[in-house]
Structure formats: structure tokens, C-alpha cells
Image 1 (cartoon, one colour):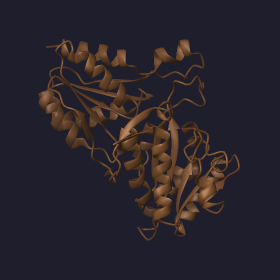
Image 2 (tube, rainbow, N blue to C red; image 1 turned 90 degrees about the vertical axis):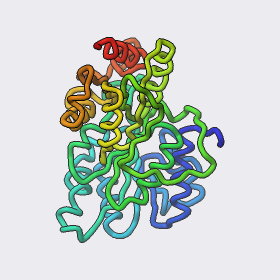
Image 3 (cartoon, one colour; image 1 turned 90 degrees about the horizontal axis):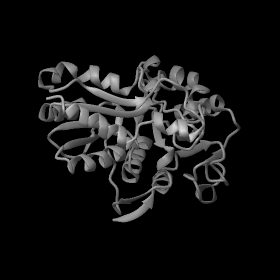
Image 4 (tube, rainbow, N blue to C red; image 1 turned 180 degrees about the horizontal axis):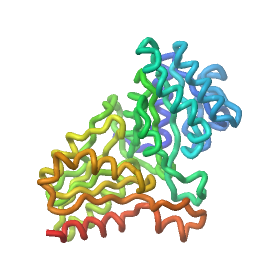
Length: 326
């Protein structure tokens, strides 16, 4: 194994797929000689040139629409949006075009396109650059939605996304880019729709997405010292959703906590809760619980921002409360 930054795992996946398949092209703001806002494309412009690493104008609707057209005509574009908040600027191209064209054409054409974009708070980026948009796009059919946690997950899932023949929304947490992780020297493709049980336990199931997986693992270690055994599941993909892994885990533990940084109202936690309730209701020892961000704009001030986004302490406290409901 070797140590690598999360952002470099992303760059390696892009590099390897571009080298493997000359139909893979990159589009986005400042992804060329600047190497991207978070340096996830550093060096790729120099290696592959302007035709395959294309700096775009500040017009998300324009270059996402261009990427959709490129995908329809035989290329495999990977589009970088500087922040996931900007999905709203390109929403018509993403939701009404890329996601629906295969259906509208009766399956005659496909849209093999990936949209990469960072989510989450923690950088004092304020209300228009700190949101987590995974729940919003999951509402609309036709797209796959990926939320990688570690560098290994990011690299394996991104390679899978690039080879998929459907549009894929690939959400990377901005607070993970400069974190170091151990990864395998050779990383296999990670299949969509198969969650990863990263820690086994018997008292409660924690289903987490993106950076919340690591926070849940930290909380589980604290809980273990107090005799509480938490099973942690890295969801990996929201669409497709691995219901079976969640259900089997809850049947064993009797409790379920869902942790996702998107807004709690109409969020991933509520959907998973409703989705598995029929199968797990009679196994539950306590009500299903969730942790997300309250339904308020993300503050700029760190003193206001950090108290509202999910944290290790919030997960720890919620698990303690659920386990005490015997």
C-alpha cells in the first residue's frame, strides 16, 4: 500500500482512464494550466493538451450542455463544476437533458458523462459555496449518484463512473482533498450499488456518506471504549441504493442512524428511512434516527458553521441516546 492525498487519487483515476481511452475528455473552469480549483487535474493539461483538457468559460449551463452533446456523439466527457452549488446553474442541462435523453430516445442513445463536483462545509465558503446537493439530484430519475469517502473509494468509483454509459453525478467532499489515505497499489473498479461495511458491530448500524464515514468511524472508536459496538456502512452510491446491506445490518443490530451532510429536510436520511422501514420495522429496538444539516443557509462564520454541520460529537451523542432506548 502507499499513502496519497484524496485529490491525487482523483487525478490518478482521470489520468489512467484518459490514457486507457482516448474518448475521455475533461471540461471545466480553470482545469487546464491551473490544474483545477482543488488541483485535481494538475499536470493533465501538459500531458494531454488543449483538445482533451478544455478550460471553459464561466458558464455551467454552456459547458454541461456541450458535454452532453459530446457524450451523444461518441466521447466520454468528465465535467468539473467548481462547487456543487453551481449544479443549479446547469440544472436544465443536467436534469431535463442528460438524465432524460436515453429514456426520450427509447434507449437508442446513451449519455456516458460524469459530472465531478465538491460538496460540504468546513471552509467558511458561505451559503452559495458550501451546500451538499446529492439529495436534490437523487430526486430525478436517469442519473447515478456517487458519494466516495476515502482516496481508495474515490479512485475506484471514479474509474467505474467514467466507464458507465449513463450520466453520473460524482460528489467529492472538499474537506478531504488534502487529507492523506493509504490505498492499494492497484485499485480495482468498485461496482455501483454495493455498500461497504467498513466496521462490523452489533448494537447499532450507522449508514454514512462521503466524509461522514470517517467521522462515524471516529465516533465508533469512542463508543467502543464505552462498550457500544457500532457497525459503520459506507453507502458509496445513493443511486443505485444498496437496500439489502442496510436491511441485513439493521436486522442484526436493531438500530439505525443515517449520517449525511445534505440538508436534513427531504434528505437522504429520510429517504433511506422510508425505503427500508417495511423490512426492518419489527427488528427495531429504537426509532430510526438521522443527522444532517439543519434547514438554514450555511453561515460564513466558522463559529456558526461548525455547530450546524455533522460532527463526530453529534454522531457519538445520537448513538448513545439510541442505545439507551432499551
